[in-house]
Length: 80
Figure 1 (cartoon, rainbow, N blue to C red):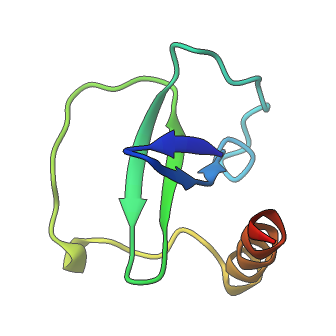
Figure 2: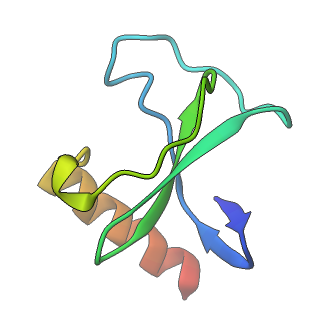
């Protein structure tokens, strides 16, 4: 979890999905803030080459239904 503009949002590490080894978060890490109608998440970025805002129709879901349910459960537990 990170505090983004006064809002606590979950951090998702996609390294495992791409077959990369996990690593600890560092203070210098950069995040990609991604949002849908349902939630906002931060994706860990190994490096950033630029910033661009894109139209929602250009995006695809990066969470499976199972992952989304697990995230909802973790957020509900953390809020309670």
